[in-house]
Structure formats: C-alpha cells, structure tokens
Image (tube, rainbow, N blue to C red):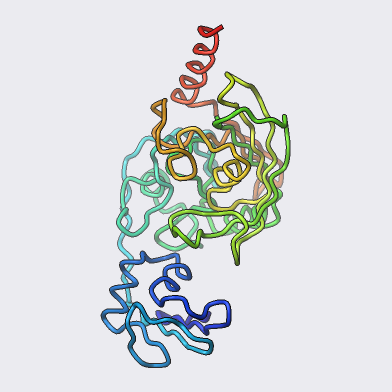
Amino acid sequence: MSNQDNIRLFNIDAEEQCIRLDKFLSQSIEDFSRSFLRLMIDNNEVMVNDKPVKASYNLKIGDVVKLQFPVIKEPEIKPENIPLDILYEDDDIIVINKQKGLVVHPAPGHFNGTLVNALLYHCKDSLSGINGVMRPGIVHRIDKDTTGVIVACKNDNSHKFIAEQLKVHSITREYVCIVKGHVKNPEGTIDVVIGRSTSDRKKMAVNVKNGKHAVTHYKVLEYPDHNHTYVSCTLETGRTHQIRVSMASIGYPLLGDLVYGKSKQKYETEGQVLHARKLGFIHPTTKEYMEFTAPLPEYFQKILDTIRNEKKNMN
C-alpha cells in the first residue's frame, strides 16, 4: 500500500483474490468503519483499475484499488477542567494515575472528556506536539477502562527520549489483573503475534497475518478462589489490547472483559479489571531511572475482597 495525501493504493496479490471489495477494505483499513468505507464505494470514491465498482466486486490478482478520501479538517481540541491524580510532574514530564472510564486522547466522534483535554487545561501550552493536535503530549496509551500509571511529555525532546525507550522495550510496565479461571502455571511467558481480527475489526487476535510480535510475562499473585486468579503481567512489547488478548489466548480472559471474555458477568466491573500498577523509565533530562507505582483503585480492591470473602463463606 502507498499513501499520498488523502489517496491510498492497494495492489491485489494471490492471497487477496476472490475477497469482496468491502470486506477487503474493512480488513485493510483500521481508521474507518465498514459502513463508512461502503459509503465511499457507493459514492464512487473507491476505484478498481480506475473504474467504479460495486461493494460486492470480487477482487482479482493484479487489480489496483484506489481510495480517494475526503479531506477532513482536524477539530479544535479544547482544554477541560477534569480532575487529575498527578503522581509526579516537572518541566519535562507529567505522570498520571488515570481513572477508570477516561479515554486517553480524542478520536472521531469523541473530542472531549479525554485525558488530553485535561492535560491541555493543566499544562496549557506545555505539551509535546509530535503526535499532532489530537494527541499532544501522548507518548503511549492505556485503554479507557484500564486504570493506572501513564506518562505524558511536555516538550518534543522529552517525547522523543521516552518514545525511543518504548521502541527498544526498555521501559518497565507492570499491570495487575483478575482473570477468570484457575491459572495452572504460577508463572510463564506468552509469546504471540497480535493483529487486527479478520472477522471483527474492533477486536485484536493472535497469530494473524501482518500482526506484530507481542511478549507478556505473567506471574500468579494469588488465588482468591477456585474460579479466579490475581495476576501480575509485565510487558516486553506494547500492542493494542496486549494483556487482554494474550491472557484470553491461553484460556484466562480478564474479569469484566466483554470483548475477549464472556458477555455475562457476576460482578459490576464496568469493563476489564486491569490496572497499570508500575511504570519505570530513564528521565529525559536527569538520565536517572525513575519508577512510579499507582495503588489499586477502590473498585478493583472491592472486587478482590468480595471474591476472597465469598471463598471464606463457602469453606
């Protein structure tokens, strides 16, 4: 695939032949929904060999698919006075203990109420601009319903320095979670390839074509009862939904995870029970190693105690 401004080109090979055009596009382009891409086809903004075709067109070897995306003006992201639990702050970085339900950065259809809106209010103009107006200061992210430590950068030099550590996997990132099931091995490593699911673009999956290498080290912290395990996960890599997908792939989905686990939940979790407990890195200016820890949020501790107490009552 090649990109030039708002144009994307795909050259169809043997593995992609006989796939419907609309299905191929939804699998190949993560930025837009299948319904939006279908509308582009209907509006003749998708051409195959320079000719408009229907969404049901079956691709052939050698076909050239061309998409002409409409030019979209990035919206203005406004500062918002959203309370932040600040663990550390200086002229280069700000370390936050992110609360549950807070989206890290704006995205289409969700331009307010995010961590970025809060950072713009708190830091004003002191945020790195490497990731553009939609993600100022953001060098890494955690999911909306995941709590815990996240660092943002106040200038481009700090951003580059932290990003390089992420790239070479030298940052310490430890998460804790409650998973469904009794994890048999007290510790282990999950080494898989993670990429966008071919059947559901909103989900990630293991061992998919064009996925990325993902390594997660896990250790059992406690068996609060026979049906749940309290686990620590340390990341070598940082892939989308890495812990959620990896634990589910070995048969232990996270409690509360409706995407990779069961739809019915006994406890009121409001999403996966996952907490970024520890984050460590070399400071961009002092060049000294710093490590930050966020205590378990109240909801997490409450669920853990409830499971423990239920076990005691059964004995």
